[in-house]
Amino acid sequence: MPDTAPVPAPVPFVDIQGQTRRLRERIDARIRRVLDHGQFILGPEVRELEEALADYVGGGHVVTTGSGHDAILIALMAEGIGPGDAVFVPAFTFVSTAEAVAAVGAAPIFVDVDERTFTLDPADLARRVAAVRRAGVWRPRAVMPVDIFGMPADYAAIGAVAEAENLYLLADAAQSFGATFGNRRAGRLAAATATSFFPAKPLGAAGDGGALFTEDAGRAAEFRRLRVHGLDAAGDCLSVGMTGRLDTLQAAILLVKLEAFPDDLERREAAARRYDAALAAHVEVPFRAADRTCAWALYTILSDRREAIRKALADARIPARSYYEKALHLHPAFARFSEGPGSLPVTERLGRRNLSLPMHSELDAATIDRIAAVVAAAVSAGRT
Image 1 (tube, rainbow, N blue to C red):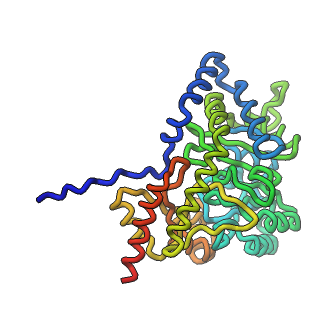
Image 2: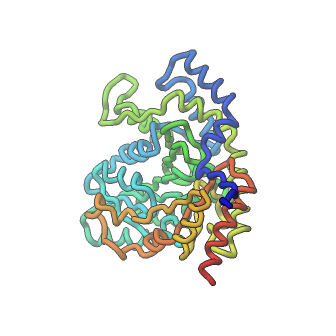
Image 3: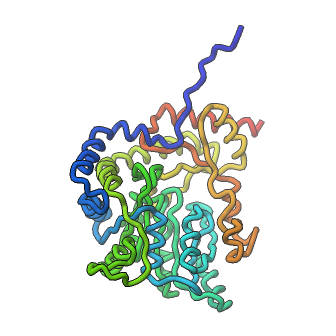
């Protein structure tokens, strides 16, 4: 007799379409308004979104950008960071962080990360700043922690190092919008914060988008000027800028998604807690710091059985992804800034052990249980 067992339905890694279906009617209404008024570049929805984002994080100034990468570039340009300057960044992150530093002519200096939070290690930061000062090749100018997988870095400890060393503190919150550290939301944890609205992010657009957050009105004005070719109100080009504006249509879509965002964060948190309960006996589940909350851009486990888990999930039509297996200091583009393999042991170890499971606001309990059962079975098989 042929095997007639039903084939399990595939599980989306990030269910962008599910969220779109839930919000479709409101999104369509917002898009129609933009099509009716025709102000596709810096239309009224852009300013409305900036004000709504500022309200959400609790104050300050917001300048939207064409992408998260644009946001980082603009933030570096506004501080005049360039050739001869050193910017300290974690190596356990996407290339965009270090790429932006190199793009303005500065040197990305790679720092190891904390094994529990996966974010920049303040103690290693202090050591590497001291080493750069001793070497005398580059001037320490800035530090850019990355809130990896939605978890804010330790801004208290990193901020103390930055203040002692006179470093510009720029937060890369591409994955952590909606998270908190202490009683403050991401966006108000550093002198400036860059975030991304890439579709798969916790607050995602229907294309590229980003934003900059700052408490400083003068800095915000500089961000606005740089995102439009460095032009001032009179049309004079005061310095080289870029085309870094958020499209009005994307702003309109994000306004709808921002209204739903608190509920979406609750859904992600509920999914993470269900994963925790089901998986804690089998793998290392994400660390929860008492002084911060996570936006759950990704739910990432650690296991020495990673490849067996990944194969079992694939066989069950469940996607899983390992991030930063080749850390930034091992990429050819950054070789001249790197001390090579073995120089960042925690980063390299995490690259060999991490595995991200499906995580999104549409994830239901039955699907989480199905995923967890496959992971548990794969781990148990290795113990027999």
